[in-house]
Image 1 (cartoon, rainbow, N blue to C red):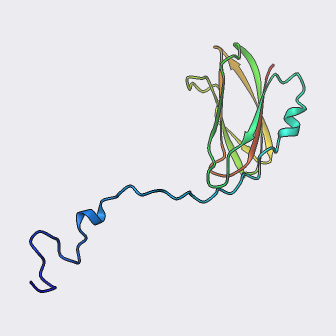
Image 2: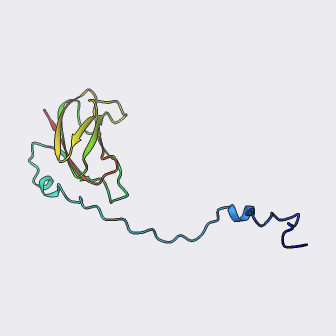
Image 3: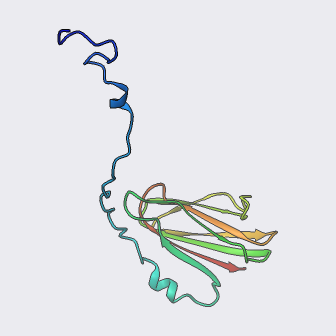
Length: 150
């Protein structure tokens, strides 16, 4: 058989064989270390100095560069009644805030918050619990959320 002839049991040289295109499990090499989040601790001092009239307070950042995630926090212990939710942000151009019941029923319209900045939302809970979801749309940044009875 000449070099240009294909054996009946193997594909021609110009077409990769199935084994050449079938993925195989190879040992993985560690991925590059993510760029650390520059917003870690941004609201830390303010949160630690929290006045007692804001009983529910949470803060944080959206994650390392290239590993940013939406933040959702649920507080099932909040009793029915009127509340004020203050959402502050820094870093991204804006964030989108969703306030809903733990099962996903909206309590107010989604709010866009220009960063740095804040928005205050009046919320009336008919049932216990509230979830707050913050989406920085893939940008790094920090948030501070306070929930107070009104």
